[in-house]
Image 1 (cartoon, rainbow over the protein chains, first blue to last red):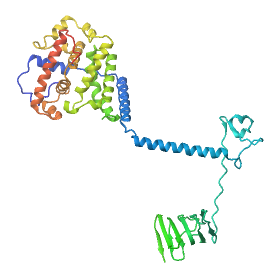
Image 2 (cartoon, rainbow over the protein chains, first blue to last red):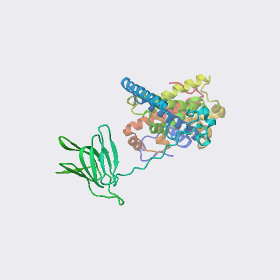
Image 3 (cartoon, rainbow over the protein chains, first blue to last red):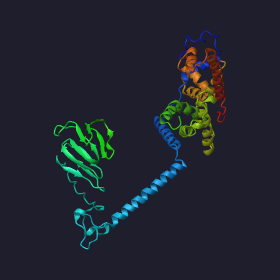
Image 4 (cartoon, rainbow over the protein chains, first blue to last red):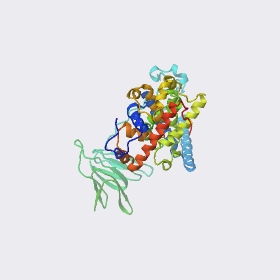
Length: 239
Length: 190
C-alpha cells in the first residue's frame, strides 16, 4: 500500500533510501503474526474468570455489628427449632398417624416391619396431610360472638372474610352487610363476581355505617364510639 | 474496569494481538511459551488493575501491559533456562541475504527481496522490538495507508507531532532491522 498522497507530508523533501526501504518493507512485507483462535478464546475465558473473582473479592464484607446481629439471629432460630422439636417428640400419636402394635411410633430402623405404602426407597414416607376441610360460609342471619379469649375467622356467602376479634358480637344481616354490636371486626371485602352477590359491603354500628367495595378495613365499637381503620382502598363513613 | 467481565473482554480484544507480537520474538519465536506468557500477563493485569495509573501513560494501557509482559518473559526464560535466540530464523538466513538487508540505508531493495518469507520475518521481528506508539504509527501510515492528517485527527494531536513521531519511528525501525541483519541479540529486558 502506498502512502496517501493527500497527506501533509506528501510534498516533503524526497525521502532517503533508508526511509523509502522502510516504507516498502512495511507496506509490502509486514504481515504480523496472529495468535491461534483457540488460544485467544482460552485467554478471554481466563480473563473473564479473573474479573469475576476480583469482583467477588471486592464485595463489601459484613462488619462486626452485622456479624453479631446475624449470629444472634441464628442462635435464636436454633433455640426455637429445639423447643419445637422437643414439643413434637413429647406429643402422642396424631390422628391418622401409623402406630405399631407395641404403641411405639415407627422409625427408620423398623421400616422393614411396616406396610409397603408407608416405606419408600429411602426409608419412611411422610405421613400424608389430611385434606383441608372446605370452609363453609356462614348463613345470612347468623350471629357471631367471641369470648375474651377467643378469635374467629368467618367467611361470608359473597366470599368476604371477617376476622372477628375478642369480645365481639355481630350479626350477618345480608350477604354483604354486617351489624357490629360490640368489639372489633377486620373485613377483607371480596370483589364482586358473576356467581356471587356484589355491591357495596357495609358494616353498621349503633352510630355509623361504613361502606366499602373491594377493600380491607377494621371497625371497632367501644365506649368511645365507632372507630374505623383502613388498610387498603377507601371506605365511606356515614351517620 | 476491575471486576467487570465486559471490560476484561474489551481489554482482551484490544491487547491480545499486539501483546502476542510483542512477546513472540522476545521469546525466540516459541509460540507455546509466548501463549503462556501472554495469558499470564493478561490475567495478572486483571488481578492487579488497581496498580494501573492511566495518568502516568496518558490513558494508554499498553506500556503498563508490556511492563508486566517483560517480567513474565524474564521469568519464563529463567525457568526454562532459555535464551531469547532466534535460531530458527537465523537458520533460514544465509549470509548473502543478511548482507542485502544490511544495505537498508544505501540501496533500494529489489522487489523480489520484499516478497521473500525471510523478509517478512525480519520486518515482523523488527516491528516487535519497537515501542508500541512507534509500531502503531508505522502501521497506521504504511500498512493502513492513512494520511498524517487522518492519524493526527484519530490520535487527537497535531500534524507536526505525527510527522515527528513517524520520523522517529522509521529511525527506530531501521535500527532494529539493521541490528537483526547484523545477527545481534534481541532486546529481552527494559
